[in-house]
Every structure is written in structure tokens, then in C-alpha cells.
Amino acid sequence: MPFVSRDWRLTIVASPPIINVLATRLVIAAKEVVMLRLSLLCAVLLLSGTALSIQVFSSADQPDEQTSRSADDVTQLPTTSSDKTVVSSQAPPVAETTNRTAVTATWQPDDPIGVVLTGTVRWRDGTPVDEPGVYLRQGRTRPSASTASDGSYAVVGLQPGEWSVSVRVEGAVDVTETITLGDDAQQEHDFVLDRSYPVRVTIVTADGEDGTRALRMALHGFGDFTIAGQRDRFPDQLAPTDYGMVFVGDAKWDSERNPKDGAAGKLFLASAPPQHVALLQRHLVLEQQLVQPGQTEVKFTIDVAELKKLAGSATLRVLDAQSGQPLTNARVSLNTSNRGGGGKVVDDEGRAVVEGLSPGLLRCQIAAPDHESYYCTVRVGAGERLELGDIRLGPQMPLKGTVLDADGNPATARLSWTELKWHTTGTKFATNRSAHVEADGSFSLWGTGRGRIAVKARSADGSLAAGVFDNPPTTDVVLRLSKASQCVVTRPKDPTRAFTVTLFDEAKLAISAVVLGPRNTKLTISMPPGSYDFEVRDQQARLLQTGSLTFAAAPCSLEIR
Image 1 (spheres, helix red, strand yellow):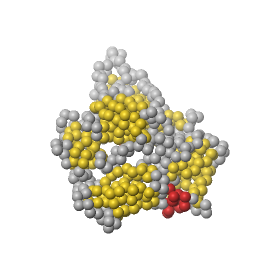
Image 2: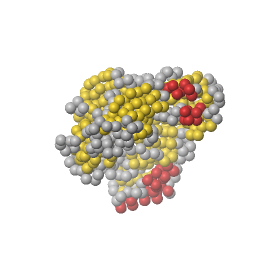
Image 3: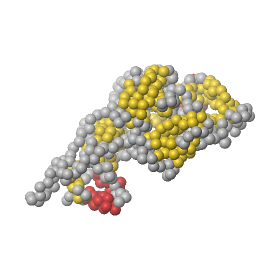
Image 4: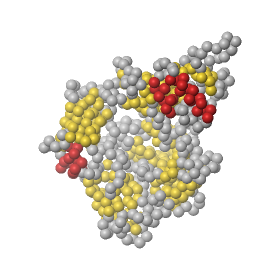
């Protein structure tokens, strides 16, 4: 029977995914009227059949609504594919004297159900995929779908705009597509998966011991090995990143958490051999083999002594900026961006030598009581002995300010910041630090000291504010939120290269810096509207391009050559 709410008329025939999603996630609306509507809707669903369709009818004078879209600071954009929308036009029976027109219902901004996306996930041979994992992303909004054993899925609460949809299933090649949702209240998109080709991977030492365990015992600063696979041969070295591994190739690596007797895990190749399989230590390709048709296992033999030769070190001294005396209670750490903690306490002269460093980009952090914190990205080459010199830390000086919305009212947001005096040219803004804004719009950044600080505020709806401020400030520090504008950046497909895009404000001060790693050929930068100068540098910090970008209502673009 039809369910009526306001001027909407819905006739719903539900499948298990829709029942699960709506019954568990939508009967929580704040208003009493909405709660009644959703409760009745769930009751209708539980009595319905198993087909996946929604028919939505509205009165002919239903007003149109403008779509809205929230954007993250940096959003990866995989290869796009067109979506398809299916809306049934069969209306429920009405009295002969009633003159009504069946129309496609549109998304309503205040409707908690939002856009409903449904579809089916099948194997290439047409058989359904049992309870596939379907994950969506639009900026910081990342819902997941409810799925069923017949391969059907459903997700609610979406809004019109571009969404990245990933489908992950054990034994399948991962699929990520970008689909564009329109204003229709119910839309459909199906996925077809290919089965992957599993290969067992063994890593041992020359004397037959487990290779992963041997690495962990010998080099605490190194992460575990990773395995990559693809049709073509890998280059001898990839572009370095600040992460503990480099994502390259089209295979999926499933490692053993507690490896034993050399059994390191399974690599799921995107297609049957011949395929190249490589043993990686971050961006370094240690060895690679060609897997032949019918081969189901790959064995790598490592030499721990040779691995130790790859380890780098860093030497520095920590001093008080005012007195010049050693800060004997300072702690120094150099880690990848996905690891933290640890560190080494300096000696009586304020010196520290950190050894066993994994080659690549590392985040150097120095902390001392009652002093500002030091955050910097450093490059460590294979076997390099890095001299960082004297690091002078001044007293803590929190930067305080206010965040306002577009109308000038106090607003809440999440803050990130980078002290420009510590920033390394050609690296992204990233310190693993963040802070929240109080209800009255006030904020206080921790660990900061004297100097210029680039600050970015991001609200829950995707609005942004950004600025560079002197600390201590000479005027009030105010960040005013506005709707984010985007710039789509593309780069050549080459895993040996990485590119950093730095934006500058009107005073020629760096206000944002993002990176396109070895695997990312496209991303979107979100900034407050305005004009920004930019520069592009490669993985060795060499200057490649300069120019100006205008962030406005329509996205701008930048092609890295």
C-alpha cells in the first residue's frame, strides 16, 4: 500500500539490503514527524517482497531543489565510468476521478533518507557475489552499503554529486568507480567483478629462517616487506613517500600478521600469469620474479646483512633558542607517517644519533618540556648519514584565534596547521596534528612557537578557511569559512615520479602543499575561493612548473607535465 509523507507518495518493494539499511539507520530522525514516517516505512519494508526497486511519486507542483556537494581537502579521483539510473514509472491505482501525473521524485535536502542507491554485484560469468563489500566516499562522508547473498546492495542518506564507490570481495580484483548521482530519489548502479589469481609468497633467509621475523629483529625502524604484482616489469626504484609502503601495481597483497616458516601471505594477481611479482621495502624494489602460467607460489630469499646497509641515520643537536644551552630532556623521533611513538632522548650535550632508519621520507619530531614542538619531513637515502645540525626550540606560544561562518557567526571546525619555518621545500603539509574549535568559535593551537603558521579550518559540511598568520599576531586571527572550490590536478602515469603542488597566498607565503604519489594520477585540491600562485616540484624537490590558479564556482584544472 502507498505510504504518504508531506506531498510524497512512495510504493516500496524491498530487498534485504534496503530493509537492513532503513530499519537500522533511518529510524533515528530528530523530529517527531520524521520518526513516524520512518517507522511506518520500515513496517512497509518488512511486509514487502524481495525485488530491488523503489517507485516514488510526487505532486506535479513539487518545487525543484538545488543540489549541494561537500569536498575534502584532497580527494582521490579514480577512473570514471558512467552511471545508470533506473526509476519505475508504474503508478499505484488511483480513483478514476483523480487526475494525477506520475513524476520522478527528486532528492530533498532535509530528507534523512536522501538519495537511495541500489544495485547488484556479479561475477564476470553473471553469477551473484555473496554479500559484497560496497563502500562510498564523498569528501569526509564515507557510508557503506548493506548487502545480501544474492549480490544486491543498498545505501541511503546520499546526496547528489560525485561519489567514489569501491567494491571489495575476497578472491576478486578490487573495483573503484566514480559515479555521479543526479536528483532522482532512487538510482541504480551495477558492478561486475573479475576473479583474482592467488599466489602464495614465501620470504626466508639463506639459512631457511623466516625472513619477515628476521627483518623485525634486525631493523626496528623498518616496516614489513610488501609484495606487488603487475603485468609489466617493475622499475628498479619507485618514488619515495612518507608512508610505510608504496602502493604500486594492480595486485592485492594480503600479508600474514604472524608469519611463520617463511609464509608471508598471499598475493592476488589481477589476471592469470605471466605476471611480475616484486619484493619491496617501501619504495625500494629488492627483487622481482616473473610468475609463469600455472605457478602458484613465489619464494624470495633475503640477506639481512645487505638490508642493514640500506639503513640510514640522522645526527642533530637540540638547543634552547634563547640561551643556546642544550635541551637535555628533549626526545627525537623519525618515523613514517603511519607509525609513531618511540624516539631517543638526547645526551648531556643535546645530541642524538638515530640509527636504523628506513630509506625514504620520514617525519622528524622533537619535543621538550615547556618548548615548542618541531615537525619536519626529511629525506633519507639508502645508507645515508644525514646531518640535521642544530635545532633551536623556543618557548611554547599557542596561536589563538576565532573561526566564523560565512555570516560572521561563531562556527565549529577541525584545524590543521604547519609552521613554515620547519617546512621542507617540496613536501606536503602534514604533521599528524589537529585541533577542534570550541562552541564559541575560539581555538588555541598547541605546540606552536614564534613564526609564521599556515592554518586551515574545515567544517562538517565541507566549508573551508585558510590563512597564514604571524605568531605572536599583531591583529586578531580570524578564519572565515566559505564554500570550498576545487582544482583537479592530473599527472603523468609514472611510478618512479611523485609531485608536490604548493599554493601561495597574496603575500607569496605557502598556504597549502599536497602530493601526488607514485600511484595517484589525479586528485582534487579544495581551497577557499580566490587566486593562488603555485609551484610544482618532483620527488627530488626540483622545480618543474609555476603559474596561477583561480578557485571559483567551477573547478579549475592543472596538468603536470
